[in-house]
Image 1 (cartoon, rainbow, N blue to C red):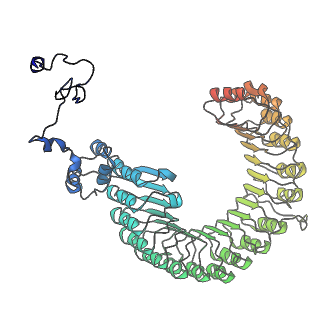
Image 2: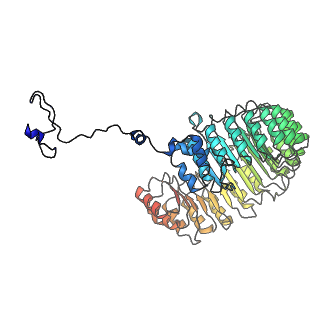
Image 3: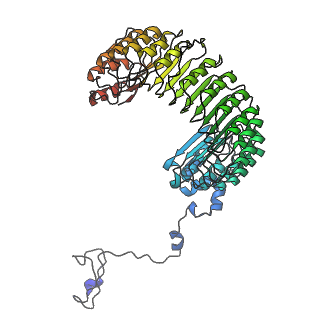
Amino acid sequence: MSGIFSFSGDEDFFSGGTMHLSPGSCPGVYLPPRKRQRVAAPSLYSGFEQKQTSIEVLPDECLFEILRRLPYGKERSACACVSKHWLNLLSSITSDESVQEVESEGFLSRSLEGNKATDLRLAAISVGTSSRGGLGKLQIRGSGFESKVTDAGLGSIAHGCPSLKVLSLWNLPAVSDKGLSEIARSCPLIEKLDLSRCPGVTDKGLVAVSESCKNLSDLTIDSCSGVGNEGLRAVARRCTNLRSISLRSCPRIGDQGVAFLLAQAGSYLTKVKLQMLNVTGLSLAVLGHYGAGVTDLVLHGLQGVNEKGFWVMGNAKGMKKLKSFSVTSCRGMTDAGLEAVGSGCTDLKHVSLSKCLLVSGKGLVSLAKSALLLESLKLEECHRINGFGSLGFLMNCGSKLKAFSLVNCLGISESHLTSTSCCSSSSLRSLSVRCCPGFGDASLSFLGKFCHQLQDVELCGLNGVTDAGVLSLLQSNNVGLVKVNLSGCVNVTDNTVSALSFRHGRTLESLNLDGCKNITDASVVTVAKNCYSVNDLDVSNTLVSDHGIKALASSPNHLNLQVLSVGGCSGITDKSKACIQKLGRTLLGLNIQRCGKISSSTVDTLLEQLWRCDILY
């Protein structure tokens, strides 16, 4: 027992493990543990020690008062990085609530797309741009029903970005009138608003915009099923600075809204775009009477507008300033309507007709005779227009015409062409004919008789064009051609390129022979020898080989090629590596796709050495 009472706890009283009470081995004897265990006894101050002393325990009201007194810049940005909670509080502080003042001119632009478009990022933008010149332009492109942008995110922008002038909201189903209204109230400087596929936005949101954004000059509404006539009427009444309006695929918008808008704002609107709306000829009639300020008009897919609508619009003679007129897929556009627009819009300079199936050559000739200031005409998929009509237009147009384009017009044929003599047209500078199967050598020969000032010639996908047709057009040209595109003309050979380089080599800058399967190295050799100014050469999918590339690299004219395309040329191999490297001193773009005989090692070498050049391989 004396040993037990003399034990101090420092020496090893029992070796072999932790001491414990073992009634079975030593009954009635207490054996203490090897080391004393610390027992946390209750303390008078233990309650205070267990509580966290952190600013996070403050109510949001107190934390808000602290944060709003922070100066803009690094301090606020640093606090925003503490937590999402702090970021959200900072982004909820409006410029009026902030103690610190900052001048924001709206110099910065931000764009969020897809998964990167979230409320949290918008809050960060709101805080981060306020002291760096202010946010002036914001574009948000969501991902449909998976979009993570809501009214809360727009609220953050509204609170921190009063300098916002341009806002684009695309494909954001979770955004509603609440978010748009908050933007309108807090960002009164907005000048351009683009709403696309935002079904939650209704007339109420547009009313809020019209009440607060007096500087609104450009409005686009696309596929917003909630927007109707009342919203347009509100914009027409209050937004007197509106200059451009674009409406597309909004089923609730009809004549009541469009006609009211055009009647109210037609005198100061300059650009009007109406696409796939449920409107009739009434809207076009109102536009014809009140559209005194309209200079650009685009009409697309207006199936409810008949011939009378276009006829009245033109004969109203109210659009004296109209310069550009584009119509697509409108069955009401006929020869009579086209003639009325040409005679009523005396300042008309640019006309584009696409998929207007009732317009024929008669309408084109009438347009040529009435629109004396016309500078360009583009026709696409207008199948009632034949070769006689298109050439008749060129023969009767005024002296201002600069550009004429035919695209996929299946009615073009040469059966009605005659050898009628015609005067020279010194105005036409650009001729483009693409994918018109009936256009051939006879048409080119006819054009060559009076188009003597061409600088830009584009003949693409024309199987009926041969060397004879192209040469008849080239030989009559009195000025140097600058751009020539013969892509897809499978019957054009080296003879055309030889004549082209010989007659226009000093002025030719761009030559496209993509898909001309009869083009060989001879064409490249003559280009290298005679073309002094060429900077863009495309010989993709031709018979060009290493010999042609060598000719380009050793050209005596020291070619300043910037873009070279040889994609699909099976005759080009690794032997051209050194020549391509030499050309690479000036190249900015190189296409060697589908060149199967160029090895991967050669490609790697070109990528390493031609680091300034954008290489497609």
